[in-house]
Figure 1 (cartoon, rainbow, N blue to C red):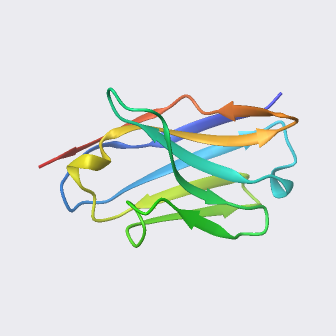
Figure 2: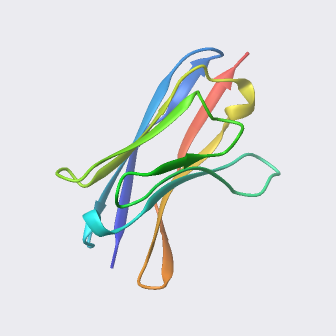
Length: 115
């Protein structure tokens, strides 16, 4: 069993910053990749950022240069620092990992960017 518990998010004005965190338990955290997804109203869930167990990262084109994913293998957490936020970043954000042949999801966190 894997448990992912998210924190952070909220309401911010365009151009502002927010930080999301995701605490993992029930798995060998150091050995797993972690991701952040988001889902806006009426749209499909999309991958925002990914970090491998070794610390390699990749990002959706829409967030490159603005978002940074990181991980702390001591505290078993992954974070998403979001800068220069835009109204189109408004969505519910989910942390995710694929472990033992299935996807595990955090509870979701609302991020709202006002123009």
